[in-house]
Length: 156
Image (cartoon, rainbow, N blue to C red; front, side, top):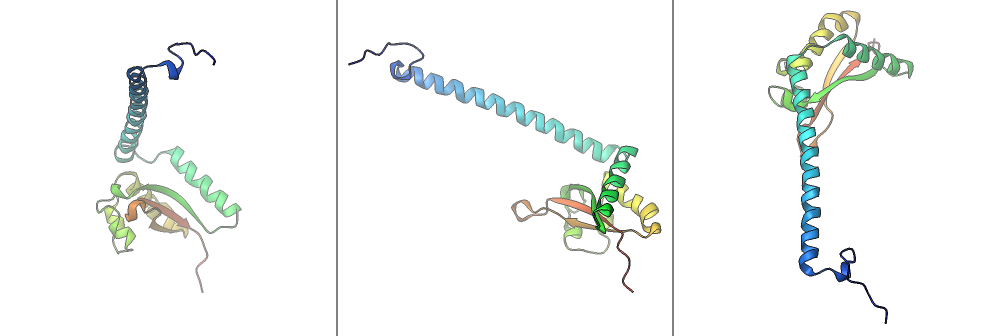
């Protein structure tokens, strides 16, 4: 019969107390890692909310919208999603948009409201259309809202 050395690295040679301690240390390290990830995600979300409600649509965002529209048109499409945001950023949590109610645009806030106003002043006069739709339903509830810019010719 082979002789097994009693070392701290051989699990068979560890006492139950040592194994419990090792398991606890691993669990604590995992919890610390998860806390760091949650903290990073919370900071990122906070920065996104701050940007959405306090800053304005800039040249970079307008350039992205132009690129998205240009790419969609080059692909033979007549519509492109040009902006999205959480439904919770609407004053009614996206209810009016989800139900396609008149006046849904009055529930917009922050950059979403600015994008809509930009559409009204620049897009609509040039023949574009804009529709807002709920694009995700986590847990069966409205999640994100998407703005879809269209340029399909009107039906005659």
